[in-house]
Length: 332
Image 1: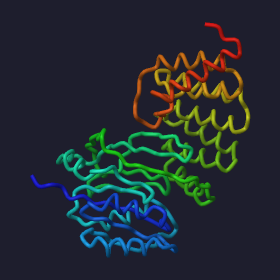
Image 2 (image 1 turned 180 degrees about the horizontal axis):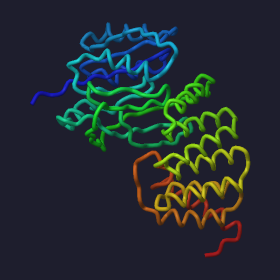
Image 3 (image 1 turned 120 degrees about the horizontal axis):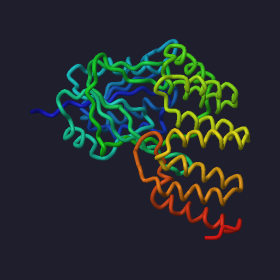
Image 4 (image 1 turned 90 degrees about the vertical axis):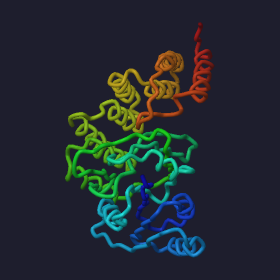
């Protein structure tokens, strides 16, 4: 059986800070489709120079105009420009990059009949922390469409047949971004179009929170909590964050305890509670909580996962809490 043809597609605007790394990462793809949505910096010159210096790399540069702006329309335009003979597509943002030897790994894992692949997605945050979860950015060429104007969802025309690639990873190194009014407008449009997507309400609440609109953020979470199959633990943790930002410490702790009620077997929320209790000077309670956390050994890589709650970082945090609790009079 012949190897599948792999295409990478993405949209960009003023990405000169990331484009070189992106191109070096994806250059072994059989096709790279890049749609320019309005670049005014040196990004296009960088791509042209890369093409000149790497003539065997197959790159399509296509300017597109999306008005009114929506991320799903832009991604769908890029996907539509991927050649029909491509078997597997990878959707990437320019500030993301692929693991080494990604092509060989994907070819080994490719199966006829699989429509999409889950894979690890690792984020290196500006504060030095790392998060990891499963994403779905790899899919077959035909039958998929991006939906929603922001925080888009990939939908298939029929029943999906998915496979999880535990050893395939996309990396992301974000910079601090200010929530723009246009982002909030797109988030508000998202929940108007699909009121039943709890994650859209969650994203909207996060946008409101970053904009200092605390009451609106709380109401968005309340709406999300009414949606069937929502993740109540995740949403109550957001309620905790909203009140914590407003220095409403007792109600924040109430919401964090509620989140733990809905997800009692996972360690991450207990660690967050211990951190919070320590921050407000209740280190003896924090130590009791960290002991509870130590008994939770269900480590799952998903959007709840926080590497801070595991291994060496957890052990160091536990020791620090113990030291602080002793100063408060803890006796063992």
